[in-house]
Image (cartoon, rainbow, N blue to C red):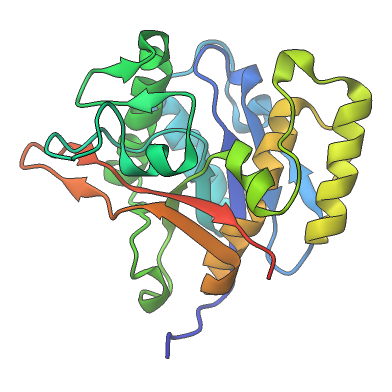
Length: 246
């Protein structure tokens, strides 16, 4: 039977690579259902994002607030070159992500390359410079770890039994309110109002982070395979975690 870990706080980032202000950041403290929204400026960040600076700021916040699970909405690694699945990682095929991460330096569509490269670099800095661990299938057997977890908010709405949030450019303020209320009803989370599209996307995956922090596998759905590490230190594949309400 898995060892019960001490519950920790959770931080979720709906990732953006062009401006720090475009990042949605949601924080859930241990022992409460009150979701807090963190602004990039609160972390001392402004301007054009740098993977190393972003990683350092996130790590500093997580250390201060005793965050044990950090969720990032973006790829953690590249496609395994010998995979039978073409053009993308297994987790992306399972969840039908719009961006496909190919072998090192390739994406479909090509316009996703800058975002995907930024995300992979951010994961790398958090792992190598800040000491975070990429989620693995045996996570319930390794209590006390600080897990770095890939998320995909679009699929999180579905695994919670809710319609996915419309695209950012097409979402009205009334729709944001409706989806926020529905998310609160299903999960029990107390969400501030108003929330931006990015903040709501960050919030919807928080229950998956909490389940991992609490060592509760029945409330998490994993898609993909364990991350692989090449001889050159490059991460391939990986899991995407989604929340589930039994």
